[in-house]
Image (cartoon, rainbow, N blue to C red; front, side, top):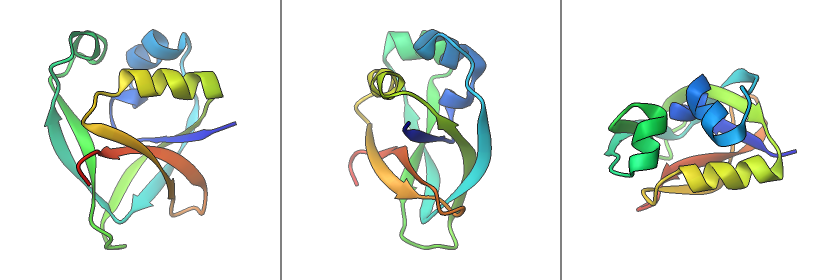
Length: 112
């Protein structure tokens, strides 16, 4: 099953239920080489589900001293496709290795 690292709204229970039909359980972990930025959300569905117009977004730095805390969720392939549908075009899904050594999917800034 795929692993998904969330540092933002996919950690919210209401967003999980709206997108996956269930509350996810996960473990804390750290992503190195990224910093958190902000993106303005205009998608009506995402605004409604998250309740936020400003979302965090990962920006690659390549510096291992830069760290982002988040939660790793084990999800199904179908749920991963549902997460893709939730994330707006400012994000791109890519594989990353966490501080724990786990390989997982992340959503980072698309322009990088």
